[in-house]
Structures are given as C-alpha cells and as structure tokens.
Amino acid sequence: MTDTPTTGDGDEYLPSGEDHVAERFAGISEEDAEARVASLRAGLADYDLDDEDAALLASMNDDFDDEGEDSLPPVVAIIGRPNVGKSTLVNRIIGRREAVVEDVPGVTRDRVSYQAEWGGQDFTLVDTGGWEHDAKGLQARVAEQAEIAADLADAVIFVVDSSVGATATDESVMKMLRRIKKPVFLVANKVDDIMQEAEAHALWSLGFGQPYPVSALHGRGTADLLDDLVKKLPEYSAYGGLIPRGGPRRIALVGRPNVGKSSLLNKLAGSERVVVDNFAGTTRDPVDELVELGDRTWRFVDTAGIRRRQHMAHGSDYYASLRTQAALDKAEVAVVLLAVDEVLSEQDVRILQMVIDSGRALVLAFNKWDLLDDERRYYLEKEIDRDLAHVEWAPRVNISARTGWHKDKLVPALDTALESWDRRIPTSKLNAFLGELVAAHPHPVRGGKQPRILFATQPSARPPRFVLFTTGFLDPGYRRFITRRLRETFGFEGTPIEISMRVREKRGRNR
Figure 1: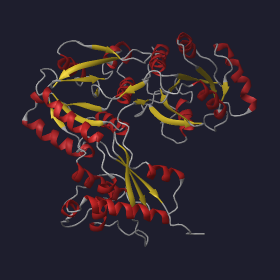
Figure 2: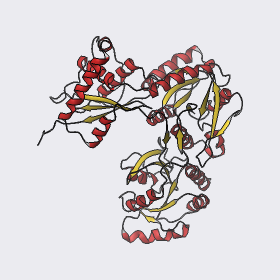
Figure 3: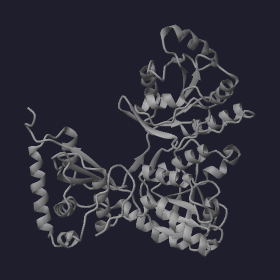
Figure 4: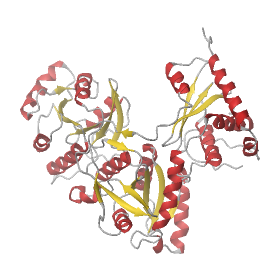
C-alpha cells in the first residue's frame, strides 16, 4: 500500500511495498482471536500497571452505555475589559499556556473555551477576549460580549485591573451582571504583593462583595478564588443540562458567517422554523429545529443562535465561535458548510478543528455547487487537497442551500458518519488486527530501542477512542499510520479517532 504523507509532528511512517495484513487478518478465526487476546492480557501481569489501568482492563468487555444521558460540565465565563489579564488568568487556571496573551487590546483568539479542573470538579472556562476594538463603542461592545458569555455560563469571573480601579467600562459590565441570577466572582487582578491589596479593597464599591486579590501572572490568590468558585458550581451545566440519547439524532449545522447556514436550515425545514422545540433544561432558551429529512426526524441543535443575535454580532469571530462551540457541545454530528465560490479560509479550517477537538462526527457540505465553473473547480480541488487533507475521511456532499439541490444526499452521509461514530471494535479483533499490522510493519528502532504494543482496547465510542499499552513512546507518524490502517480496515468514515498510549515498564526494572 502507499500512504499519503501529511504535515504534523514527527516524520511520517511510510512502509514500502505491498503487505498482506488484510488477508491475514481476515483469515484469523474468532476462536484464535480470543485466544490471542487472552494471552496478551495475561502478559500484562509482568508490567507495572496502576489502578486506572486495572479499571480500564476490567471494563473492556462491558457494553457501552448507549442509553442514559450525557452531561456537560458547568461553564465559567471570564469577562472584563481589554488588557486586564483575562487570558493570563485562563492560562493560570488551566495550568498551561493556551490562551493568547498580548499587551494589545482586542487580540483575536482561535479558541474561546478550555477544559479545566480544580479540587476534582471539571468545568469549562470561556475566555471572552476575542472582541473587536472600537473606541467609539467600547463600553457597549464589552458589555454586549459579557452578556452573551454570562448567558451561556453557570458562573462568572469578573476581572478588574486593581492598579487602575473601576473604569466606566467596568461600571457598564457591572450593571449587566447585577441583573443576572448567577454567581459573580469579582477578581482584582495584578495584586502582586500584600502592599497592593489596599487597591483591591477599593473595588468593594462595585457591589459584588469581597474582591479576590489575585496575581494571574504569578498565581497569587488564585487557589482561594478557585476553592470558592467550585463550591458554587452546579454538578452539570444549567445551560446545556442533560442531553438525552435516543430519539432524533442531533446535528449542528456550522460554518463561518454568511456561508448559507440559515438558508440551508430553512430549505431543510420547508419554511421559516416550521417545527420549533424548546429544548428543556436551559436558561437561555435555545431553539432546536426538528426537520423531516429522508423519512426521518432530525434535531438541528441551536443552529439559529447566531442569526437570533445578529444585533450583537458586529462582525466578530468571537460570537460565531462561542455559538459554534455551544452547538457542538449538544450535537452528535456536525455538518460544516463551505462556500465553493470563495477560497477556503483560515476560519473554515479553524471551525473544522473545533469539530475534531469536540469529538463529533463530521460531514462536509460544499455549498453553491450549482455556481461552480470549470476553472473554479480546478482550484477548489487544489485547495481541498492542501487545506482539508486532515479530514479526507469525512463524507462530502455537494449542495445548493438556496435551491435545496441535493439536500437528500445529506441523509446517507449523516448515517455513514454516525454509524462510524458509534462503532466499537471487539478487543479480540482489535488486537488480532494490530498484531498482524505490527508484524508486517514494526515500529522503527529509536536510540537502540524498539517500542512494542503490548495490548489494545477501545474504552469508548462517540468518538472511537483506543488505548495502547506500549513498552515505549510511539512516534506521532507511526500513530497516524495506525489510524489510517484502522480506517481502511474498519471504516470509521466521518468520525475522528483518538489514540492514546500508556507506556509501561516491566515489574522489577530499575529496582
């Protein structure tokens, strides 16, 4: 076989010549596969395993919980005017430098939400730094952004620069926060030592009680803030609530602004919101649309969020990103709309990455296909090869949102993606396949050592997640090679695949 090189960390693993992995794997009987996996599982007893490993291995034959409910962790919004240190505080809370930090107000950020944990409580942190600087409407702009963030959140961290004090913009945000019935934690940032705490106490006047004197840069005071924060958080997000499984499959129709999302949704629905279902368990009343397509009902989750807030959008990517993430949180599959009459943009690629990071199934819908001429088709294919090679596994549908042309072709694409997203590979088959693959294409020797795969299991689906117990770190290029061959053998068209490693040493080594 021939593997197509892709860009990324490390060199690609490119095996030479043909192999017979598929034929050899097909020839393994179920009894032989079960015997192999039992032997490999027994062999793990020679390695140092922790309690988490033991729990994972004990549950590997359990059925996935395909019923029940999914829940979203609570959401905390960090708001405040530009340059008060919001992103620095985000990085401090999540324990790594991910949010963009610059001394320039209005820096555009690719991401707006981050997963965080404190004291055993998981929560989602929303950074509201991605607004557009506008000197004329500064106060209104920040207040509008804060209102959207607070609307989506279970609690709010309101950051003020203690060295400057409360400004007119802070007062504008404060008035909005007083109207919401959610916990608000006032943070006086840039308090680097005890001598500066007096400046923080001056913020009592904002009416949110005791300010938290914090130095986001150095970490001073953040533990006290987080201790009190997690005490006020609900177990699950109130705006997302419990997401029931079963019933109509949930679709997020996403894409950059003005790409045709609203036109397609209206065409699918047959008119402007012919069926509206108020999704229970939320505080912001998102509108879900129930659409009949292919003789079935589908639920398009909160896809109308952006158009319902047009008066707040002001052209900023921030609002679209926040709404896209909220829709993805509740969806099972994302239909990403791309306009073929325009060059694929960096924003298109960012939205695709949001879908992948969220672990949702994916369908690519190329809109305005009826307007495509031969010259544009030639350049579009080049753009797809260059910019969308990392999602070549996603089903493609060519449509016209304006006329509804080919809208029925969405159904088989959605079915394919969701079936892959739900798929579980039996542990015996997975290890039999990997055994044949590694025998034909062993990992390259690195530093005189050759890491081996001891055992593999799939602890979950939606999306498919695989855990490999190994004797050493597998090169990123080799992991991508395994992912490609998993797709070739088991399908997985339309779903991201996650592969993680657990490097384990033999018992008694280095003792």
